[in-house]
Structure formats: C-alpha cells, structure tokens
Length: 270
Image (cartoon, rainbow, N blue to C red; front, side):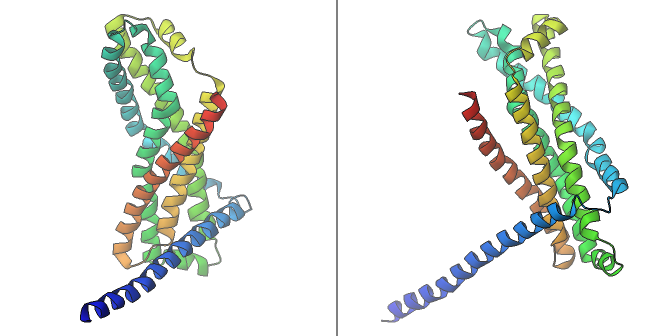
C-alpha cells in the first residue's frame, strides 16, 4: 500500500512538471517570434544607424578574415589530399578539381564559414549584449529616449546577414586556391586548366543555393546571438550563459537549416 501511494504521488508530481516544461517551451517560441517580428518592424524604418551598421560589418567581416583565410585554405588542401587516394584507385585523378569544387561550393564553404562565425561572432554578440543588459546600459538607453533595440540588435543582425555571404564566397575561393596548390604539386596542372575543370560542373543553382544558405545562416547567427544577449539575466553568470547559448544554438540551427535547404534544393536538381 505504501509503495502504491508513493507511485501515485510521483505521478501526480510529474504531471505538473511536464505541463510547466511544455508551457515554458511554447512561451519561449512566442518570445522568439515576437523578437523576430520586432526586428522586421524596426530594421527598415528611420532613423537609420549607418555608422553602427558599418562598424558592425567591420567587426563581423573584416576581423574574421584572418581566421576565415586560414580555415578555408586548410579545408581545400586537406579535402584534396584526402580525395586523391580514392580517385587514384580508379585512375580518375583528373576529376579532383570538379569533385573539390562541388564539395566546397555546395557544402563546405557555407558550413565551415557559418560554424566559425557562430563561434566567433555569435559568442561576441551574445556576451556584449548580455554585459550591457546586466550593467543596465540598455535600460539607460531606453530612458534616454533612444531606440536600443534598433541600434544594438537590428544593426548586428543586418551586419551578419550581409557579411556572412561575402565571407562564404571568400572562403570558397581561398579553399579552391589551396586545392589548386595541392593539385599543382602532385599533377603539375596549370592554373587555367584547374579552374576550367573545377567550375565546369557547377551551375547557377549551386551558386544560388550557396548564397541563400549564406543569407539564412548569417541571419540565424545574428538573431540567436542578439536574442540570447538581449534577454539575458542572472547577473555576470548570465553573460557566460548567453555567450555559450549563442554558440550552441547557433551551430544547431545552422546544421538544421543545412539539412532543410539541401532537401529543398534537391527537388530542383531532379
């Protein structure tokens, strides 16, 4: 009888906890929906913060070039080096430029760039806005009749949305350069022959899909970082939590969007 009573109490306790968790989940979705909707309402209405937008583009784009350059170059070299043995077994090393170009432009360049941006840019945005929230700088801006959401959030999301596609194209070109140097070293292929063979199998659908991915990834990274930072709490502990959540959730959504966009673009290739 005592065991039955304990089981009944446990089930009764579990039901409210599950209901609270489910309620909290839908509340979070609603808050995210309001946050995104507020961005689209305020981003394109005056006043326009051009100076802040340019500054954020500098932070997101220009300051990411060294890391992006190194990562893209290594990606091209390593992928080419790893692909050669498998193709050499079939005597198809001449396909290396085409294989590398397809892999880089369709998947590697946007994915690698987005993951680096999620770690570098997303964490920076989350930590910066969270520290401003904790020190009540955002509240002070609201009291002084300024628009902190437009200045702090909209400009950062617009900057990531614009700069990530540029970084993706740059990563792809740097990766192709690394692949060419590896091929030239082993097969003595000329520059013009390599790139002619590389870009031959690519179509406008591949380039357009890559650009669409880049814009979606950029918007996601900026929105996740801004949301986590702008809505942080719990003092200094919230700053670290916001930065960590911006990275983890940003990467998760990038992978999720990659799968969805690949599935959609697959219908147009048939």
